[in-house]
Amino acid sequence: MRKVLKYLTPALLGIFAFAVVASAQLVPPPTIETPPSQERLTFTQTVVLLINYALYIVGAIALIMLIYGGFQYIISGGNEEAVEKAKKIITYAVIGLIVVIISWVIVYAVIGEIFGVEVAEVPKKE
Image (cartoon, rainbow, N blue to C red; front, side):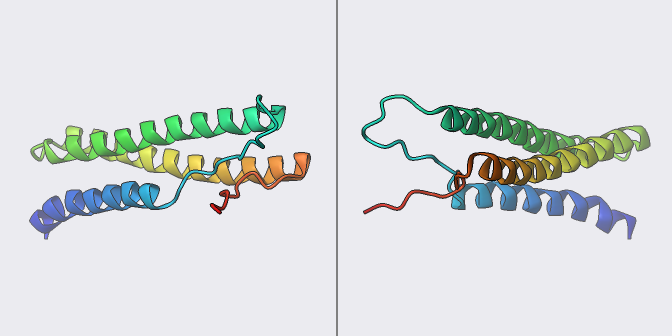
């Protein structure tokens, strides 16, 4: 049973990481359409774009740490100390991804309420 878990856990983590990356490719990032008459972004658009960039960077770092933790788990060679360290890295990376997703939802809800705009809408092509 222990050998099965030894090989099954990294495989499941790899599948999870692949699913996260694949879903990020399928869902387009929220954008803000600037009217042709405007040459500059409004304050709201600038804030939203800065928040988008910050959340994407933090999410990418969490995903990289998840992959790093999985790699450390694989190469631990059964060393209990290395396995525990890898499990902590993976745990904190998953918590980081969850925090990024929740903060993204909260930020868009707050910005939508404060400024009265739908910032998460993807513009439709005509």
